[in-house]
Every structure is written in C-alpha cells, then in structure tokens.
Image 1 (cartoon, rainbow, N blue to C red):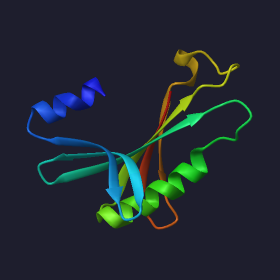
Image 2 (cartoon, rainbow, N blue to C red; image 1 turned 30 degrees about the vertical axis):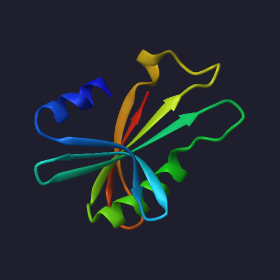
Image 3 (cartoon, one colour; image 1 turned 45 degrees about the vertical axis):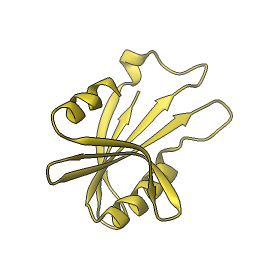
Length: 106
C-alpha cells in the first residue's frame, strides 16, 4: 500500500473497497487516463488455490470498469508455504473474455 500511495501523492487516486455495482473491488487506482483494478486474495490452509476464482472475479470488475487489464495479488498464508523468495513470482494470463491479468504471488 505504501508504494501505491506514491502514485496518489503524484496526482493519482487510490480507492479501497471500490463499489462496482453490487460488489466491491479491493483496490481501484487511477492515474491520469489509466484505471487499474486490483483484487487481493489470501491462500489459507484448508482452502484451495484462489487463482481461478480471483481471475473470474477480477474479469467481472474489469468489464464494469471498461478496462482490459488488471492485477490479481495472491498472498500465500499457508503454514507450509515456500519461503517468500521461492514463491514470489509474476505471470500474465488472459481471462475467458480476453482481458489481461497480471498475477502476483507473494
């Protein structure tokens, strides 16, 4: 969040729990004519990998924002998760509706 606040200090905006229809997207960042939707997920013990559900959820939000790209950040909070330096990764995927999602694993 501290990094994102630098964008705000540079003239952008950052809204938490951004209302989008009946739902709430975790973060919506705007800077100039760029709007970035960001969904955050926690991967906990006894729950499955939230990647697919997060992509589908974010895809819906991006459609309502009228943008074709966004970020999905997954925090691995499982007891036996790999050390952060081994699990930290990014990848870009495309939703079923053709939107680009950058997935950050932390």
